Image 1 (tube, rainbow, N blue to C red):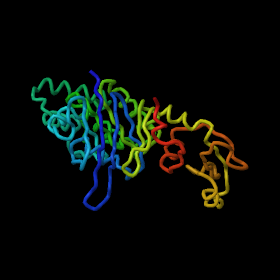
Image 2: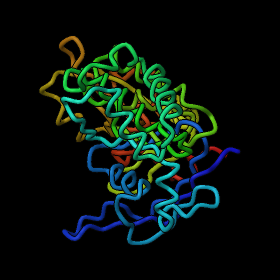
Image 3: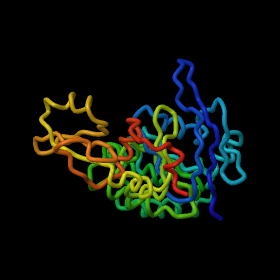
Image 4: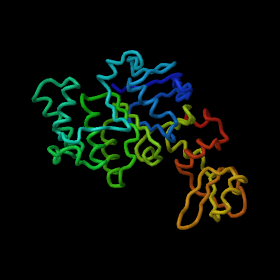
Length: 302
């Protein structure tokens, strides 16, 4: 049976006064769900809270009938978690460490545990290097090992926090394929600041910044809301500050020696601007910059 993770009114303020989460409410169905936001947006705080590693100040979170915030032992039995900083024992082999983690997860039967470990190493394309010390693994191999340990015990809730940061393009594709294979009846939360991770993998998503949810919905629906509203112009670098002062700029980038600025406007904002197809990146930057004129609630698909 498919589950839904329901988060309502979740808030967290740290002792130093930083308000990391502010009244966060989300409904996360089974499948891949992207949580997109800049560094410091509150993504890791939300992930750690759902992973039972810290407490919220207020709010609720339920997975089906399970109270995620109160019944932590039960949550840990059905949780797979790959944190942003995943450490390994460098002198231990992948097979040895995964076997050890499987024991800690409660897989006591030796044969059954060996079968599970072998299957997960094959699924993550690490079986051929299972005897190799983890200290000799590349960044992508370590991330795939992280997913292998997160899949121990057939979890119903899987949380991966910034999983592709620092990976080369080939490893990112391999990691994407692995995440996409996990299954439709499991809630998988992908927390990232990389827009393409969400657009490539996730059927549903949310954008979060400064502890608040700005938008939720399907990536395609959210992108469609900016159709015919994104305009682009190439300008000299020296004119960037003046352009930002004059127009609702959402992003800039340097391409082949030219500075390209993207602007959100219902009509041509000025001379030299040409319409361009909206992307999820435009939605992301427009939301973070507060350049979306339509209220957030109206941007959620029916």
